[in-house]
Image 1 (cartoon, one colour):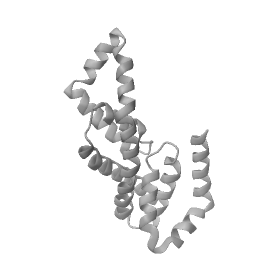
Image 2 (cartoon, one colour):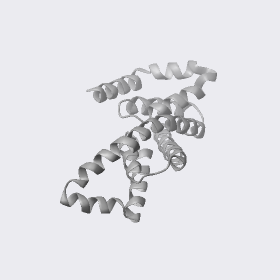
Image 3 (tube, one colour):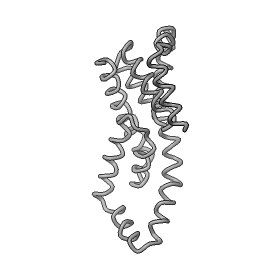
Image 4 (spheres, one colour):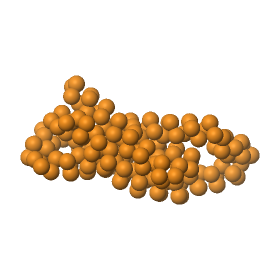
Length: 172
């Protein structure tokens, strides 16, 4: 229900022009707005509104600045999700898998080097897409990615995703 409300609010903001007025009046604080919109780009509940905000910002501001500052903000949102998923969610899934015979085969698949690279690439693609980051971060959590690698990966993939949103927003 919350996701549907978020999508409704995003559509309302896009059609009403309220967001344009807010962004135009932001002046020197537009960089903070880019950062905050990037933070909201990561959660399933706030992604639709963030996409609208980032798209509008990219239409009136420098596209590269919006994507880089939004990517920096997205790191904060992703870190919160990463700490929760890596430490708890992945362990719970693995404990469920261990209790079944077929689960042992799946667990051995998770430990393969190629599967780790696959989850890394798939997780990165999900993070860069307009889809919420929880699934992509969950895949990176399965690969036992270290924090020192996660931060630049989060930044790069989110910045690319925001850049693509900006390109589409300018084309529309």
